[in-house]
Image 1 (cartoon, rainbow, N blue to C red):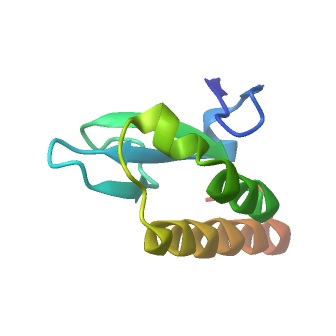
Image 2 (cartoon, helix red, strand yellow):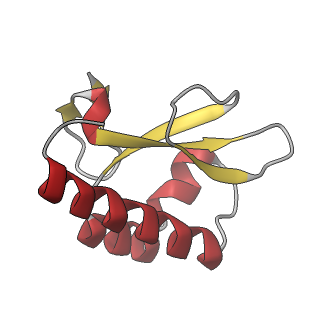
Length: 92
């Protein structure tokens, strides 16, 4: 179980995606959950990602400036994963 940064609830790790900041302050999506660096987990809900962009909750949690391009990448990843889950169920 991991805490979802966007909803402040505990959820199974496989229902979340990890966002990681490396030593060079680069922010990236970590689908494997194994990249080195400071991480935060967010839900696979596109509307939550849009809300996070407005509230800048990732910036406050990770302590770095998060580019708009990253939010576009994160939104596309989350939207894809949500569609995949609806199409194929819980298998990965």
